[in-house]
Image 1: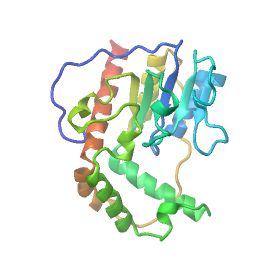
Image 2: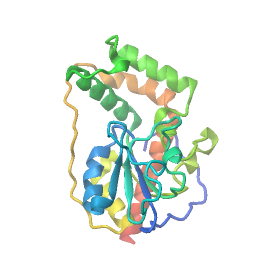
Image 3: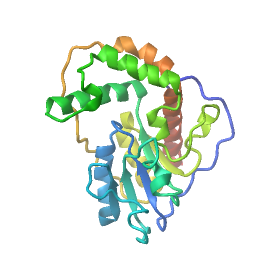
Length: 248
């Protein structure tokens, strides 16, 4: 388990998915969200709607007023600031799924992904001056130290308070997974949503090679991103609890 131990407390009942209501799948970048979309497409078919800034018309309750939400799953990225947050687009939503990833591995994957984009000819503003990993990491660390509610945590549907981090998945999350155990995550999601288990397919793997020894940065990362590690530990706990519920 990553992060500091989570204190003992009363365990809330797991929310039950209601297929007559909207489901929002929060795709935190670099957490196997593109792979999850393959399973969601199998489960929801034409009731799956994608919400991404690169789409011509990202789906939004505000954009699409009176569409029938029954059986609909919206899957996509949400920004940690107005007007891009979950509640800005779907204030009525009260059931969610998401996948977390080891925070350090997620950061390395993001660095590699951004560099691969730039090598492919895309404009990546955060790499405009071609920073070394050391300088980019220092920037990420400074941001986390100045605001412990990082961009990852701020993408979740409801505000995250450091003193209440243990409740981060208590309200509305019908299932939570971790990308390192993607097969188990798909099993849990299928069970929670009343769907058949989907094939484990991995897509959108980044191809970017360098010789940086990232491991030397982990300790500093764990210190700066402590709340993310706690949230990840809670996601691991939640996954285990959901797996036990399947086998009971």
